[in-house]
Length: 464
Image (cartoon, rainbow, N blue to C red; front, side, top):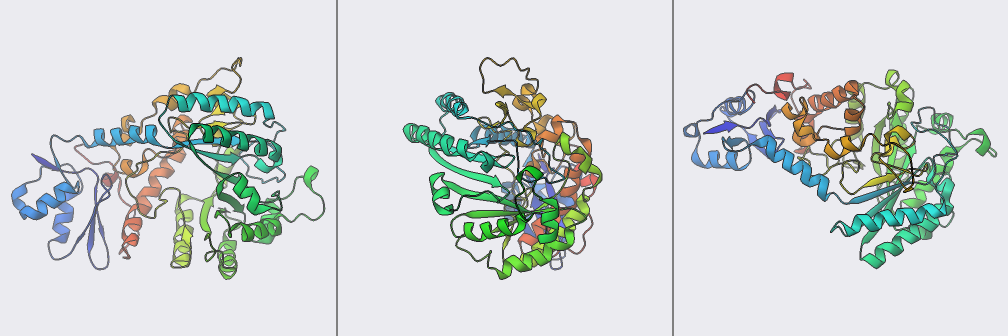
């Protein structure tokens, strides 16, 4: 017996229909008078499929591509196995929060600006944890993400810890590379040597609009202000230099008040050749939102998913053939079934906070009730979230397990599940309802006939 896959979708375009399966990532172009009939036959509620209705070669192809499933196959179990394999095999990512402090005072910041910072002695504790981790794992790669606050406010720690970790990796035969998330205002003048010394291969720099808006939002805090409040020019100049040596992710933070700056900003950086450099810039539109408990107030000020998606669509058209735009939900531009998880879910990855506590998610640094371990072996801190991170599995969730977006979503942000943020979880579903068809169709250079969102009936299929 055979059935239609619960992960089948059929999208109508101007010239054909595209049959797509979110579990396999397979896409088939359907044309001719039977295209609509075949598409409707294979999507929707669960039904038994009669092989005699198909040309034998077509049937075999659809079965091999995952559109038609043998009754003995448990599709959800396949996804569960893929999910746990990803958790175990995702490369080791160590995020190091050198300091919680920052020289800028962004109004939407999700972190508490406190004086805590890592000290030289903490590097030994980090090395000890890495020693234990790699002795229990057969992995041979380590990626360090330097994080803050503004990580370069504690450059002394970074300089010493980076070299110690690299030395550890060299002795153990572990491949080492790093990245850094920075506001771009405190970099040393010898940029190339700094990048090489710390094996930095990617830098994320944020902009909050054109000069006026950027400086108003990313203003210097009083204790760090010396002269003109102009972080924009300093950051802009830094990116122009960085692009000769390293990939730079240009994160553009968007809300209602600065959205009109996006396209003039894109014109400026295009004219400056940022997408034509030795290492072309990658543009990352970001919706300012309630990233953590501390910035919960943003939930009433943020753009809706629908409005944000409309902006991203316009950006994609603007940069088509010019530069790369990256969306966190679909980093490859096509909704391939996921074979990876975020570092928070990766079995061997962890985040070191400037408070000497260890977290699973970087967005939780400073929320001490969310810590899962301590760098200090004699800590009396109570850790209550370990069970969640160790066992989180969207394939057994009452909602996610029934959702046809599951293979490309893996439940979305686990932090939102931990916090029970149903509004954010609903937004994740809304994203896929609004964008799945467009992402598939656009990838093949086609256009959808309409922007009608996918229905709830297609998200949750009857009979499965």
